[in-house]
Amino acid sequence: MEHENENQDEQLQPQQDEQTTQKSVETANTEDENISFKNRIDLSELQEGIASIKQEISKVIVGQKGMIDMLLASLLANGHSLIEGVPGVAKTISAKLLAKSLDIGFSRIQFTPDLMPSDILGTSVFDMKSSEFQFKEGPIFSNMILIDEINRAPAKTQAALFEVMEERQITIDGNKYKMDLPFIVLATQNPVEQEGTYRLPEAQLDRFLFKIDVDYPNLDEEVEILNREQALKGDLKTDKVTSHLNKAQIKKFQDIVNQIIIEEHLVKYIANIIVNTRNNPFLYLGASPRASIAILKASKAFAAIAGRDFVTPEDIKKAATPVLQHRVIVTPEREMEGITTKQIINQIIEAVEIPR
Image 1 (tube, rainbow, N blue to C red):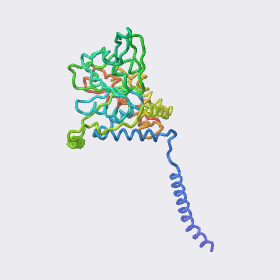
Image 2 (cartoon, one colour; image 1 turned 90 degrees about the vertical axis):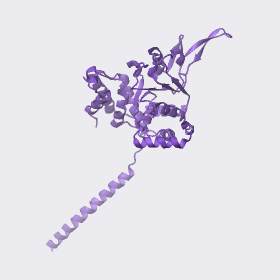
Image 3 (cartoon, rainbow, N blue to C red; image 1 turned 135 degrees about the vertical axis):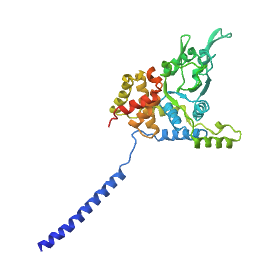
């Protein structure tokens, strides 16, 4: 009898273990179902707004998702962007479409070699009736400024943008004039043309949050571009684009992005990347503290676009290259070897340990 009871116990034990395991799995599954990710900051309105802008831009622009994401991140982070690419890759029209999808003021300035600072900022004009000088505002007084071919104007005209890009104000004849917020500058330039251009100085480049490189479309995108052009039948591309976000909404979204959470170890991760640019033997000029602040702001913007209220290392990696590539300078020896700033930045990012 005892032997039979032992056999029964042995048969029951696996069944009990199996039932216990099954219950544990069911409990775990139930817990997984109950655990739902919820943001501490409400990003629903921001996500809807960003999705609507992307949809409007995609009515005209084929591909170029990376550029559009960076332009939107630039808007959310309240930073300026320098868009660089060969002629005809939709640099100017992308900036115009972004402005048209927003219910804000827009101004386009074509930089030319004979352009003067007063042509941008404005000038004081003598009024015969009042016998006083009155300030006449230039095209810089708007919300979104598109500067086309920024490197075609001489240094004195480029320098006129220093104060307004950093402090959102200009000083003329001892008077300060504040810009209406939001104030975003989007500038374009051609990387291959050298004749008739004036290279932007390092201090000017440092004013831009991003330098966005625009590449050629691939074969499928090229075919889609041609098909869309054929379907237009002479209509304007921009006629289909409608505005969605107003000034108050943009300001609200910028305030939300400032509240995005970033852990202390990720702040140190950004600092480590920046310090490594200063100690890198391949770089003649490293990144400044303004660059680390730019990565912080940009990574928060990328997190918000992705629908998260916290920053991840991937957000920082995504922000690092467009933030740093125009701020660091390769040593002449490495430049002669064909090494680019982008390659060195990628090496630095790979070398710095990701915090866990």
